[in-house]
Image 1 (cartoon, rainbow, N blue to C red):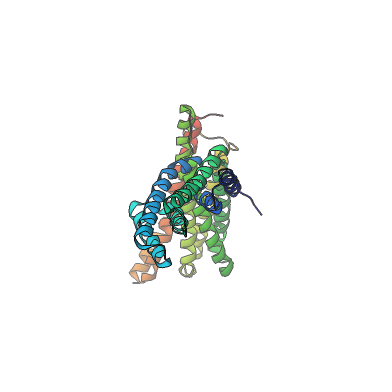
Image 2: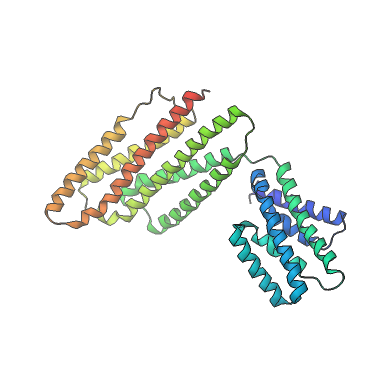
Length: 349
């Protein structure tokens, strides 16, 4: 079982909100805890970014809850109606992330049964604000997670999986059932990488030199992500057209596999260069084996395509996307290679 920073922060925020609600003698404390859970964010920047939105959404929820309770009472059907209206208003305002918290506010206020309703509503509203405040305090107090390290770690993991499958993709050795499971896992991993990239991008820097370095790294990581995506797209294209590939002449199939091996090795060398395990080149040198191999594959494929076109065999046209993905992947790797070398020309060890 892994306990991430957000899990720990949520637990601390709930604890803090319960203690504060007890200290100020505000009841029931559960609403403060719920608000803290819903308001916690993965980073301090997102916490500050969302706090204004959450406050607005909760004010709207509180106003509607009070108004409808005065006008129509707090029967279950009225509470349901107010919840529907709150969701619609928040969607219209673009406050999708604050909808659950606004609903909690409505339910907390419309739970009233006796006593002064306005004091009851104010007490419940303050409980919600106390929970939001606890979440903001915890986000501010916690050291931000090292998103750069996590991002590169996940990129490396995705890269290893994609390259491993690419090397076996044309050999017709993949277990179809296991492969489908792995494709789903890789897709989920690529989504996680995009989320980590967004969090890393949001991290604040306070020194000009650090900001400049980070901006260059953001571009670099974006290109790494794109290279992974291109490699994954090539893998999926090969799997999609594997029945057509079975009829490709052996020499072309051998060339294709050889070029894939060259590209995957090139991808690994670029990452080793980023990690400073290989020396960068100044100026940038284009690896001749990558592009000469690609050209040979395309020349042979086009010759074969023309030959089959004369025979009016249209099946070959379906292989064009596969070779287009091969070119895209090679181009993405070249751009990434140039960027890594450019980065280290400005940021020497």
